[in-house]
Length: 270
Image (cartoon, rainbow, N blue to C red):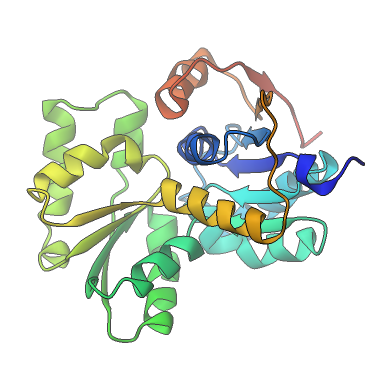
């Protein structure tokens, strides 16, 4: 195989939401070739059991390793919360593994200004307790308030964005007492960067709204530089694969990746 740096970066998610992470990686690392896999046949992961999430994640990881990926990016909070260790084990020394939770935990716990941190995400992510336990383990002086916000993903996917309906749903979640004292809010789901501005506006811009996709991309950049695996490809050709295809995924993918992309359907579960 050609040298390490030229190998692609594999990015996967339960659907097309992880394209926000892929998009941030593309902006921070324009020379890298991406292979994106959205497990649209099995979405959402947020209400599946841990065992099921692990089994899906393992198969996708094997596939991305077969594609010679040098990094596996788990662009899904639910998979990061439930399957990180299993994915690390399969990747072994064949590829680096980057999830969407650890870089954000490092970021918030190393910034002294954050004392009362909020987290919103799917039921699967919030119920796992991963953010809370990891943040407290790194900085016992922080308090963490977490809230499952299950209506936000279907709301975004159905196109209710920047309108009265979405503002009402956002307001109804963010006004809950759990989040009343926070100084920062982690967007613990790869769909949420789409509504970041509305969330900031709700808090009158007095709460730092933390978009994990950009933090993950920056942390990946540091990792590749440190390992001398940065690729300076001038015109990388990306691939976007999904396990189930509908016109709807094609339409919504443009919202997340900010340009037209061609989705290819591939079945890993034959």
